[in-house]
Structures are given as structure tokens and as C-alpha cells.
Image (cartoon, rainbow, N blue to C red; front, top):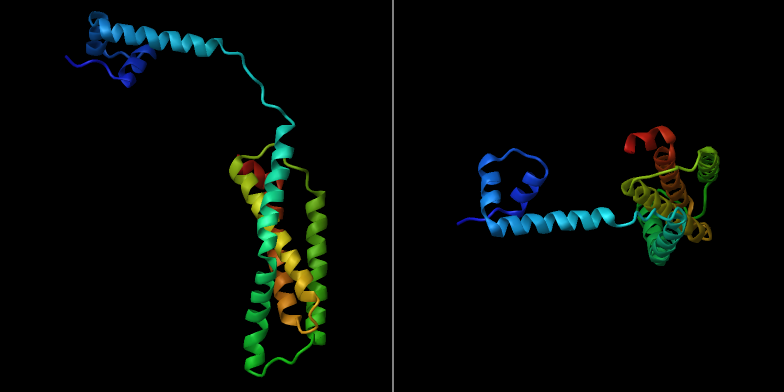
Length: 195
């Protein structure tokens, strides 16, 4: 004799009309015992007190996650800065197209990029903090913020080198792209679409 599966017992409990299975449940002592055990477990679960989530948990958790990620990401900062500087400067120097030092054109470009970055930061500050976020959105925001922190570290290291015009420009462009992404993620209209 085949006994009812857990899924079949739950389906019957939920009111599904499964004639042959319902008849078996009435006639089979083993299945009836299992059905009663399910009902007792449901009653026990319903009797549990509701524990409201602590509203102050998220900021502390988020801070710990951000700090942990920043430590990991920043440990790679020096290597990334060197790689970016090498990737941007070396090909141009090897081909004889770049001279050491920041050219006036590079300085103007970097100054323009810094102003754009500052403008995006001001825009971000004007956006309201999201009231609620799903885990995917929160993770995306934390990842972009971590990437910005890494780029900031690289900018600090590369800017100390007087021959860093193109690398510095590339880093500021990367920072602007990340700030634009963060602005979109934090925008209330976009956040509403992600819920």
C-alpha cells in the first residue's frame, strides 16, 4: 500500500479537492497520524510570538560589511594603481607619443574631470537616503562605493607621480563613471523600479 507523500498531505490540508487521496487519508491510520502531526506542528508555529526585526540592525551590519570590503579592496590598491599607470603610460611612451610629466592638456582635462566628479558628489548628497532596499540593490550600492574608494586610493598614489597625466585622467574618468552609476542606483525613481 502506498502512503501519501508530505506534498499530498499538505495539499489536502490546504483544501485541495483530491478525491482518491482524501479517501485514502480517511481509511489509512498511518497517513491520518502523519496528518495530525502536521496539524500540531502548524498550530505550534502559529503559537510562536512574532519577533519584530530590530530597526537599528541594518546600519551596523552595513558598516561592518563596508569596512570588511574596504580592507580587502584597499589591500589591492597599490597593485591596481601601478597596473593602471603602466597600462596607460607605457604604450604611449614606448611608441614615442608621450613625454614624461603632465602636459598642459592633461592638466586641463584632469581639472575638468575633477569638477565633474565634484558635481556628481553634490548631486549624490542631494538625493535622499533610500528608506528600504532589496538585498541586490544594497549589494550593488556597496560594491560601487567600494570601487570608488579603491579608485580614490589609486588617484592618491598616482597623483604623487609627476609623470601621471594620462593615468590620472583615466582614473578620474573611471571615478566619474562609478559616481554616475551610484547616482542611478540611489535615485528614488530607479530604486522604486528595483523593489
